[in-house]
Length: 375
Image 1: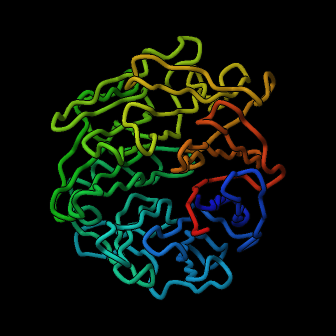
Image 2: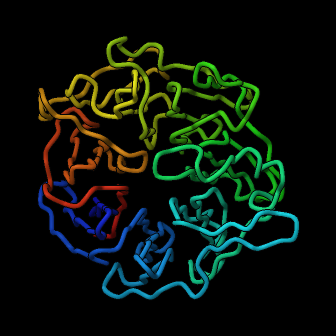
Image 3: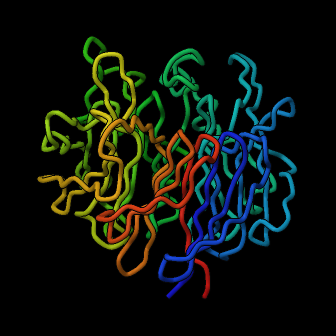
């Protein structure tokens, strides 16, 4: 069995938690970049040792750091993501890189990055230099769908959930908050909106793509034609070759609802997915409903949902979980991992059935990823 490493990105640095194959004993490595805002930390599964960290370094601005030795040493990208300034289009600057995705297994060294404000970038040299994709960044229609810097989420609009089809390096999907879901079959040269069936907040126009607010998209490795989505307006599933999203979150308990930020899919079962609901009522407190945090799992494609809370606080726990702060490993019996804005890191053994706290008092957790390491 492989060892695992949990990659934790926080408002004040990054931590690596190395676990044994049984996921019982853990060794903490960190902090890295103490005091820097780290929005995402990813390990390249193609070599098992290259790490990329999306950072915002105070007065030095946004950048990407790279390590080729599992975090023992770091170098800054020679050319971090930056928008091109073109005549006729308003100038934009990257506030921070929000999302990092390794490219297809056949394209070693290729990475994708999503930024705030919304932008899509690609690297072909392992993250050392980044090139903007003009089909998104400089397209007038995309610019209109993105809205303005004042629109969208409280900490800024963002391009996120960059998905690469494991069967086809040219097949890409991403989400924008706000701005909908978009799909490419030609490696990002052109894009098609995929918002059919998605709902929007009452009072807004469902036909206006800028009103669509996907929170997290996931692709099923065992069935890449199926996509899952946690949205500002519910939980959705899309089964290709169909193009219409189905809202499957209506089967969630009414007092809990189907609003949230993170979403996970089982590595080998496309019918199994997990969410961590947030209170989306009234003024959108974005906390665990009723102060009772829990994951919910479906094992039948969204027809039924089961509460998973053994070991979690039973009351007065007003957690907030960000869209990147939940992960699942690919062990024979997967475990779930989540981080809270209060700085707690948890593991959900047996596919989330039993929860155990791994760390407290970390800075606000922005993202959690998990990866396998050679034994």
